Length: 147
Image (cartoon, rainbow, N blue to C red; front, side, top):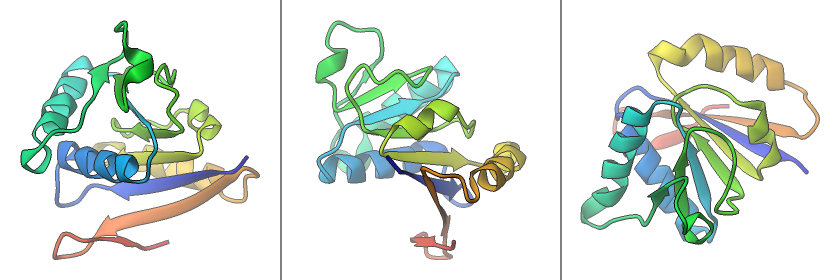
């Protein structure tokens, strides 16, 4: 199995907005998503953004509940997809090798995790089972593939 690893560098929009956008697109594609962030406060902010996404809401829950398996989007501190997700979004900018067990992985990173993202990009170069893509926002806020 090959995992498509998409690197999203934050420059204009905050992580909460980018995560909600990627979560919405994941659901539109008919997939389930695991959103990973070790920090509970970040997960709480992400939850708020998912509830308020573009005047609607994206159904989700924090991992550890009785209905984890039913959730289209699950927020967790680790890469254990209790909801059966095939997509994982690493919202805290920290790469986890377990992400290569998913069909698609999103690494969302900012200036504070830039060096780690660069190291991950290099480590995945030519690695069997991993296909890398790099996305950045243009001046109008549109995400464009840059590599």
